[in-house]
Length: 476
RNA sequence: GCUCCCAUCGUCUAGUGGCCAAGGAUGCCGCCCUCUCACGGCGGAGACACGGGUUCGACUCCCGUUGGGAGUACCA
Image (tube, rainbow, N blue to C red; front, side, top):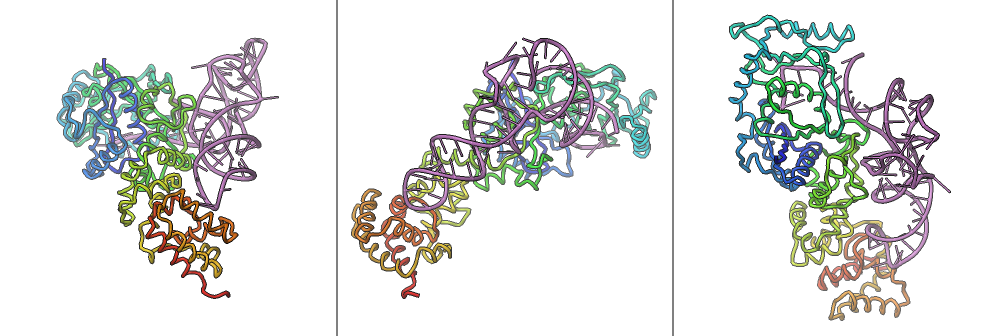
């Protein structure tokens, strides 16, 4: 039997990190077992759901490389895959529940419900519905009413969780949950059961926060006479302070990480490793993760989001990437930064590849190659320290020496510069830094020779001479 | 309050009763490389929450305590 897994986001916001990780683990398991990964849009909250959010979620999933076999845009014969388009299907299940006596109509008012809840809480008991209408046998003519599940009153329900192990719930703790609202629409816990069944989902993998819903859903499966899927609950991702991950801890949306210049490979790598381990594997591709993945390696405890490690991984991915590919993929980031690139791009990127933790940093580090001379960002400290009165003549002469360098290769430039230093009895540092500041406006940057080559002779000579002009023209 | 889950370096984790005077990664510190910054190399500090059991032997098993998290809706 093929394993069928699903990710069921609500289009009430962007795809956040936690959701992406849930999707990822489902995807990994599906790919690992040659199963099916499907996407279901839970858009029944009409007040908060928006088509734009759905589009964004789909885009971010695709960006991460989490492709789905069934769902919006992919087809599949278990559709439709949007809950709003499935509304008609739930009525028959509700009717079945009513007929078999597994559900009943309830006309209790909200006021009464609140009073019951408060009374229970005051006495230290679990706040739950008291079953007031359970034995009344109310018919469809009872006026405004909800439909409640007549849950088992005694015994216990054991959830055989693939991550947590057996989790036992006392049925007395669970109450008669509402499965259909007074406006006729079914509620979440009922709908997931029906949808997961109709979509033939075999494994439900979701966040920890759903563990408490699971016994209710399991009882619903049983009441409906449906096979119960396997469950696995993943620990949730926490913020740096151990609390729920929120804006206070930085970005929470996948889109924000893309915009900040994180590579999908790195984000996926980090997300996989967060809460899952396979020995000492740290830096791995999606394919490698698929090959090694298993629910057995999933941690039970929540994990804190660590930007430092994500950044490190991103840098590892940037460094490991073929320079030509990296150059192509950096294009949108140059564009976003308003930096126009040219044919030197690949060479340029090569010089900053090991100096950027993100694509945005890469663009920042490379911008000086492309910006107009007068638009260079000057670091005052660097100028003061390295462009002094005495440096002016050095840079001017160096400009002439370099102009005479026909080959303009790293090797020949190194020979030229070193010969110049020896002739002047100057340490390399006394020459290299002024050149760097002239070229970049900054005191840090790529290696001297690779930078000169990547910049091109024309720009290099021009900036070195401009650097000379920038030096004080008289001793102060 | 009640129910459920969880607990190894700051962080992510390895560890499934002896191989652990607890390993890796990140971050931090130092040294090296060096024209700067990175990269890279080497080294260092840094953890089994606590208390009881079980056992010849517990990081590993059981119980409790403490701490953290989740749920407790006519939201999903």
